Structure formats: structure tokens, C-alpha cells
Image (cartoon, rainbow, N blue to C red):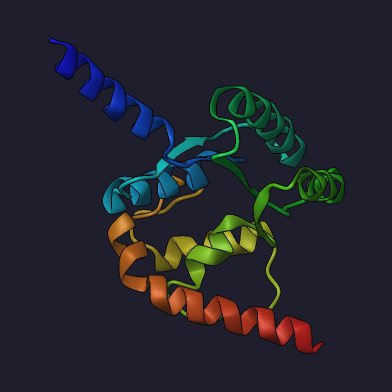
Length: 179
């Protein structure tokens, strides 16, 4: 009996040492896409949890800050908080970026919106787009996506285009740095 108890304690202790990653997202599109990818990849030895639909970038920041304080109490140093939000037309975007940087959060910021990343799954995008233009273009390129009625991405299409999107996104960043 004592052996069973101590082995259970060892398993429990080892689980607590796994890194914990919380991703705080602005909307449901991001959360659902990231959650489906998390489920598909099933990373062993890492705990990934998501919070979505928290509103504008300041809502993302305040939720992430609350989560970071909670994680510090519960897990010591083996945790990371990541934030994901869009530029869109948010008045508090710059302030949220500044505060997230100061807090040390890993950031995934989309300009103008998360949908731009999804467009890069399908083709190059060099011209500036507004959020509504990006959403319209994505609805033509990505099977089933409709920003108002079904703002979710098909995870099979995401996985099929991930390498191309990464390459295209890197090219966009390089073009922006060159200007």
C-alpha cells in the first residue's frame, strides 16, 4: 500500500513540473483555431490552456495579468502567458502592447486582424487591408468561413497551409522592415 501511495505522489509531482502555457485571445476565431490545433498536436509534457472572447486588447491584457498572478501562486516559475489580439480599430491597442511587453507576455499581434494570417494560408498578400476587407477576402478563400455567421477556420486547411503561411508571413515582415 505504501508503494502505491508513493508512486502516485511521484506521478502527481512530475505532472506539476510540466510547463503550463496559457493563451489569452481577444475573440472566438483565434481561440477556436488555436484550441483545435492544440488538440491535434497533443504536446506531451506541456499543458496548454486557452481563454477566448475577452474583448479588446486591454481585456486581453487584464485577463492575462490576472492569469499570470494566479499561475505564479500555483506553479512557481514553470508557466508562460501568451496574448493574441488584433490591431483592428482598437483605441487602446498601443497601450495594451506596451503593458503586455512590460509584463513579459509572449505576444501574437495581428495587423489588421487574425484573418490576415489565415489569408496567408492561401496566397501572398502584399497590399494593406482593413479588417473588413481581410474578412471578406478570407470568406472567398477559406471553405466555410463567414465572419458574421461562422467565424471559424477549417483546421484541415490550416494544417495543410501552415508552412506556406509561415513563409509568406516572414516575407511580409521582411518587406515591412525594408520600408
